Each structure stands twice: as C-alpha cells, then as structure tokens.
Image (cartoon, rainbow, N blue to C red; front, side):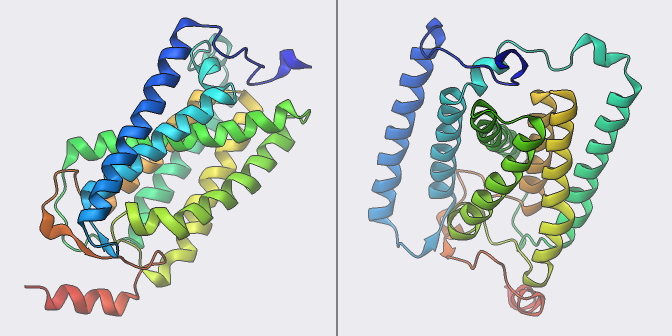
Length: 271
C-alpha cells in the first residue's frame, strides 16, 4: 500500500540537508519571534504596521515548511518531477490542468478582486511577488501535509482530498478570521462580498486543486496553483512592503472587512 502513497514515509535526518534545514528554520523562527516581541513592546498592541505583519508572516512560512518536512512532503518534493513524462502527451491532463488554471485566474483575478479594496496603498511589485509566491508555497505545503497525514492513516486519494478540504479549509478559515486577516493582511475586505469570495474563489480553488491532485498525483501543480492564487491576492490588496513608513500604522481592522458604504466614505474624506 505504501508504494501508492503520494508522500511515502520518510526517515527523519536520513539526508544531510535535513539537519541544516531544521536548524536554520528553527533558528529563523526564534530570531523573528524575538524581533516581533521587541516591536510589540515598542508599538501599540492595537495597531497594524508593515514590519510586524512581515515578521508574523515569515514565522508562519517557516512553521509551514517545518510541518511539511515533518509530514514527509518536503522530502518528496525534492524527488518528484513537476510533470511526469507520461502526462505531457495526455490530453485529459492538459484539459484538467487548463481548467484548474482558468478557475484560479478567474476566481482570484475577477471574483476576489471585486470584493477587495486597497485604501490607496501603493503597489511595490518585487517584494509583493516574493511575498505572494512564498505565501502560496507555504500554505500549499501545509495543506499537502494534512493530505500526507491522512493517507498515512490508511485512506485513499479521494478520502485524503475530502479530509484535506474539510480539515485544511476549516483551519485556514479560522486562522484567517482570528489572526491573519487582522494582524498580517492589511485592511482589504468588503463586508458584503466576503461570502462570494469564499464560495466563488476559495472553495472552487481548493476543491478542484485537490481533485486534480487525487487524479494525477502532481503535488507541484497543486503548489503552483496556490502560489498563483495567493500572489494575485497579494498584488490586488497591495500588501505593504516591509519597509513601509511608520505612518502606515493604523488601528487593527475587522477581519471580515468593512461595509462598502463606509469604505467609500473614508476614501472620499481622505486628505
């Protein structure tokens, strides 16, 4: 049975790179957490600012990569191709992959954009591309880690896809509503549009991405899809760069966003 697993069991520290990776990631988390604690003491607790947002995000990214290594996802990614040779000539694979790309591009480039505001934040392309791609790979590997744990418990690809959607989707929703969309992402949500974002962007992305993974066993296609989705989100919301000015500190915002009418009033009244 284990030969059919997408992420076979791994022996920890069986490769030289693993000990270096674990030490580096753990040290990075510790250093960033200490820097964050220092800023928290110096700055008001109820304010959002770019430096703390990036530090919090970086801790989350490293945590995701450590979980990915622990679950056997990261070692597998080092040994599998992005696309298998037999899939290059498979029209069904091309059709499914093209359909997935269209769903992600439309869901985030059109639907998600419609419920997002920037509050006139400037666009800093290079740091936002780096942030979005890293965010996508980190979140994608965390979801694949849930898949790996489920399949190692003896479940097949359909059950693994279903479990990852239910568990990963629920955890991600709680993470965003309780922390990420308040302390990491800048104010960007339109309250009346949130349900559309979930039903027409997030759900189709995760459902179709997991179905593609269950059918074709391409973890890199899954990761690339999440990287594209979250990079688009990062650019559309105009995530502030790390070196954003101190004047960017504003009161913490509600994670569900603000009503459209109050957003338009704030923009009209802004100097």
